[in-house]
Image 1 (cartoon, rainbow, N blue to C red):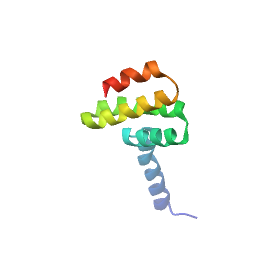
Image 2: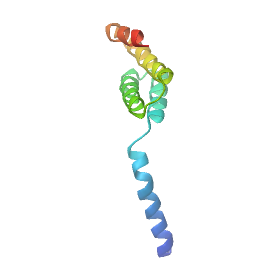
Image 3: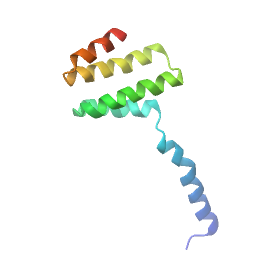
Length: 93
């Protein structure tokens, strides 16, 4: 049987990591989007690129990084055949 101190440490660790797991960073969302794009899951990639853009802008990241993320979204939209939606994103880049 585990000691009460060990059990308390495990519970504290679990509670401390929960917000990190529940609220992924824009970097992890971007990585997921890039992976999904590579696997051909364009619907999920599109959703995650849009989320990454929104969170990155809120975090105040550099314009160059935003351009890279937006370009990824535009490429994803093109891969989905959504040319009319992709074109303004390319221009935005």
